[in-house]
Each structure stands twice: as C-alpha cells, then as structure tokens.
Image (cartoon, rainbow over all chains, first blue to last red; front, side):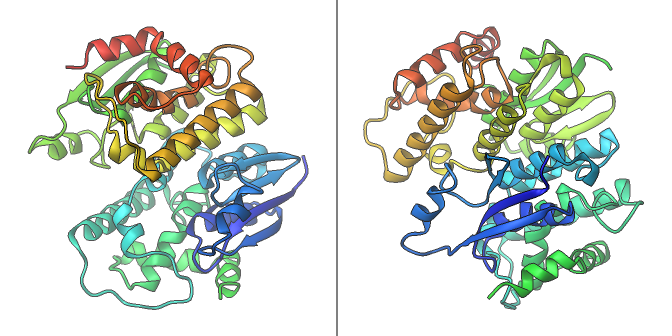
Amino acid sequence: MSRDVTLIIGTKRFSSWSLRPWLAAKMAGLNVAETEIALRQPDTKASILTHSPSGKVPCLIHDGLVVWDSLAICEYLAETFPDAGLWPDDRAARAVARAVSCEMHSGFVALRNACSMDMCAHTPMTELADDLAADIRRISAIWDDCRARFGAGGPFLFGRFSVADAMFAPVVSRFTTYDLPLNDVGRAYCAAMWALAPMQDWKAASV
Amino acid sequence: MSRDVTLIIGTKRFSSWSLRPWLAAKMAGLNVAETEIALRQPDTKASILTHSPSGKVPCLIHDGLVVWDSLAICEYLAETFPDAGLWPDDRAARAVARAVSCEMHSGFVALRNACSMDMCAHTPMTELADDLAADIRRISAIWDDCRARFGAGGPFLFGRFSVADAMFAPVVSRFTTYDLPLNDVGRAYCAAMWALAPMQDWKAASV
C-alpha cells in the first residue's frame, strides 16, 4: 500500500475540518501532497467539486480512491495504515475515542459559530453566551474524562496520539485564539498538542 | 461477547439519532433492551445524563461499557460483532460507506431544521427553500452513486444492509413524511428501507 496520499484542503488559516485528517496523516508518517483551495471565494465550491463529490473539503486521494469527510478520512487512514496506531489498541478506549470523535464531528455548533478557527488571530473573548459556555464545559469534561481514564501512556487524550486528538485539534486552536477558559488538564493537553511539529507547521503555513 | 445490548433512546416518534444504532443493532440480530426517554420534557436532559455523559441520546451499554453517539455506537457494533457484516467487506466500498455516513452525521442542517423526523406525520411540503433543495439534491446524488457503484449485491446503498443505511434511515422517514422529491433510485431505496421489519416495528411503536 502506497504511503503517498493527496489531501485536498481549504485555506490553512481557517479550515478546521481540513486540519483534522492532515494532522492524522502527518502523525502517521505518510507523505502528504497537498492541494490548498482558497475558501470564501466565488469559485471555491466549483474548485472543490473538481476533487470532492460532497463539494466540501477535506478530501483524500489514495491509490485512485477518493474519500471525503474529515472523520471518514481518519478512519480510512487508521484502517489502511494499522502500524500508525491511529486508534487506541484497547477496545474500550477505542470505543470511547470514537464516541468523543463522533460527538465532536456532529456537535458543538455554538462553539463553531461563535469561535470560528483562525490560526493567525488572538482575540480574547470575555463574555461567553450560555450555549457557548455549555459547549466549553462539555469539552472540558471530555478532556478530563479521557485523560483520567485512558491517558496514562502519554500526554494525549488516550495517551498516545490518536484520531480523537486530530478531531479536537481545531478546538485547541480555538481555545488559544479566543482565550477560552481551561482547567489544568486542558492547559496541559493544549500545550501537548501545540508542541507537535505538524501543528507548528500548519500554524506557520497559515497566513 | 454477550449479544445482549441496552440502548438508551429518545421518543421513537421524533428521535432520529436514536433510530440509527437501534436499526443497526436489530439488523445485526442482537437482543436489544431499550430505555426510552421522553424528549422535550423539563427533565429530559437530567434523565439522559443518568445514562449518557454527553447528555444526549442514543447511548449504548454493553458488558459494562458505555458508548454514546449514534455513529460511534454503529462503529462499535460493527467491530464487536463482525459476523453481522455491518460495514461492506470491500475496502473501497467501506471507505465510501464511512464517507457518506460521516457526511450525514455532520451535515444536512437545512434538512434537519426544516424537516424534523416525525414518524407519525404526513405533511407534504410543496415549496423548498434553496438550502433544503440543495440538501435533497446531495442526498439523491449520494444514493445514486452508492447504488450505481456498490449496490449490485442487494437493494441497499452498498448492496447488503450496512451502517450507511442505518445512518440514512431517519432521512428515509423524512422523505416520506414531507413528500420530498425522489428519483427512481431514491424511490426504490426508500421502499427497500421501509420493507425492513425493524423499520416497521419502530414506526408501529411511534406514538
């Protein structure tokens, strides 16, 4: 199986959905060719549709197979490159890792709307709307729970880096950009995520 | 591994998220114990929180393990009961099945908002807002593509019943309730889904 993959991604500064599988692919040690499509342009949708049938980024091309959706790409990478260990080895840990990844994939609308990802900005938010505060409390509870139950083997949600961390990477960026409240567990977790070389590379490439 | 599972679900009439893993578990031939929690009541959230840490239905309990989120539960069932064949056997088909399942999990907000699931209603919708029409076109394109590329072995999206069908089951209900436009492929697919005994059972239990 070729270790060369192509990812169609959106503008790195803003494309939270693209960061997830890109980070997973990088952490898996794959050779990642990128096609970056500028978001929020008149021809954005048309450009994306030349690659991705959903009309959305990200989209993976591997050995002629086209796989879209950030979480589906991560699942595909985990399955195709098992040596990378992108899901936890333990079945209970893996089940919870998928639960928090799927919960992130479908939820947290208030956080998405109020705190869109912007890798270049630092705009502290002092007043939190009720729905945003609830999202932040739930994220904090997820991080506390995963770190306490499954985090013994390393600094990430399930110890070793996993798809769950890839799914939460854009949230880590949002916490930093908007100075959202963090407890000690959250602060340590965000620091571990920012210390990853690919996270620094993505940030450096964001303009 | 015990074939007895417990699912915490919301009101069957309305709980689109609950229908998905319930249908997958039934199609896998598991013994499903249900706890149905009435949605839209003052104590709904508190009741759900006694079972599910996300505060949302559905939630699975199996051999002491708690797994929440509709898609994560389906993944767990597929992995734990491989004989049920809940994902397609072919790796390309499986990758696309996950792509459409994940796309459904995170998207189609216009459809969700304008056409909430109501198993007991029949309220034809004659005027479609632009965003709703776009969602319907995309769903139709997904069904056309899956049936054409992977549907040879049966009447479902990937031939044999899979998690992808479980994820789209609430959408099938919406198409029926609101008389949304269907092409021939869509009509045949919805008919195949409604012909499933568990779909009829869920509908019969919706009041």
